[in-house]
Image (cartoon, rainbow, N blue to C red; front, top):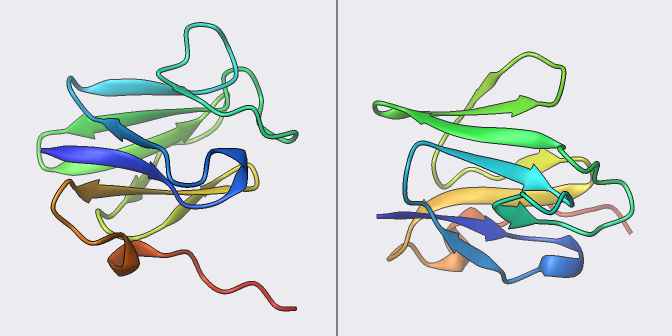
Length: 98
């Protein structure tokens, strides 16, 4: 079982159990993961699982592969797909320069 984790932004610490094959990320009413951060569009990105791989597709853009337990960015928010038993510390986003 996998979950989508919010690693930064207003929804830091949120976890969405991933049932099914695709999930809408954004601030639209129909979003599966609602992100209300300022730079996130209503339909920012679609996350898909295709057999054993994960894909993220920005609205109107090309799909790209993501690896589980590796952070990826949606607008200015860091997310991670991880098994539910993976420690949160195992998939933290890169440090931002101060």
